[in-house]
Image (cartoon, rainbow, N blue to C red; front, top):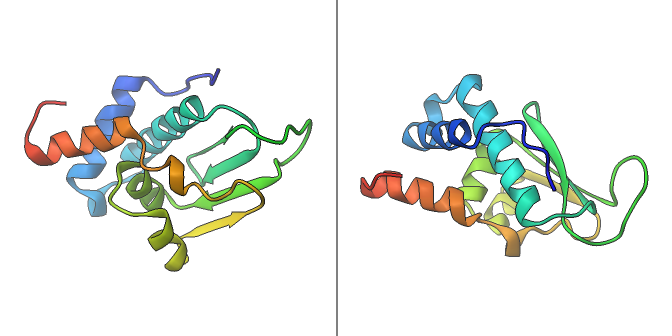
Length: 134
C-alpha cells in the first residue's frame, strides 16, 4: 500500500484549482495536485516495475511486473507537471503526449496508455467543467 503524503481533500482541491486555470497554476497548486495523482496512480496500479517521475514534485513506483530489489526499476517514465495532470484527467492522450515529446519513457511496461486517465481525477475535472459540485 502507498504511504500518503498528501491529504486527499487538499489534493483534490489543488487538482480542481489547476483545472480551472492550468496556465496560471503555480508551485503551491501543482505540488499537491501532482503528488495526489501520483499516489492515486500507485494505489490503482500497485507494484514496483515502473518508476513514474514528475520533477520536482514527486515520484512513485507502481505497476505490477518484474520485481527488483535496489535502485531504479526496469522502466522509467518522466514528464512535467502539466503533462502529467493532463494525462490523468484525460485532456491529453498518452500517444499525443509521446508524439509531442512531452514524455520520456523507457523499459518494459513504460507504456501507460491503458492506465490513463485515472477515473477519480477525470471525474473531478469533468464535474468542474459541467458546474457540478465535486
